[in-house]
Length: 232
Image (cartoon, rainbow, N blue to C red; front, side, top):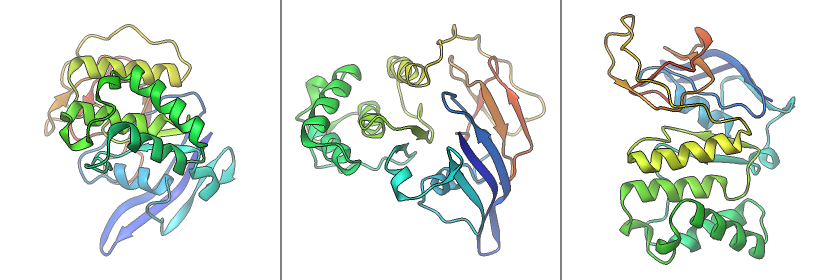
């Protein structure tokens, strides 16, 4: 179980996280909403140790999260963290090795994910020659190649075509060990959030906290609810 307790993070006079707390059981897909600047990416970066909180704690399986635990995490950032001049297969294998896989394990895992994500024919291409959608697939492969215990995704469907969205949704449902639901119907816009445009995924997230200003205001199931633009 992932536990966030009382996370607070300030950047000068700006409060990015304000006593943020929630828990995520293992085997659960969990998304959270908030407008741009609400602190969603800061929360993810704090979980991964890329940003240090001013107060609060992050625990995984009831233990404080340290370097050893983070080696077993996977992260797919909103901004791609890929080396553009590296070849696709070389890149993913290299990152698998950084997470502790042996050379043979990294090669085998990389080949499996390239085939699964439809990148096998692009394995020897430089990353910067790929389309935006295929680069997103490479980013996903890099995040999951070491079979992480916890997978953190920031705007995972951004820039993907419908086929790639479907592929990514399949990967996520299989990894969460949950039966994939039938696609939901597109929702109507919510009148209580008039200032934001709606985007929608046909494979909604079971649990949905709202983080309007660095603080969780509510958590509710959302099997039939859409996703706000600017949310993660």
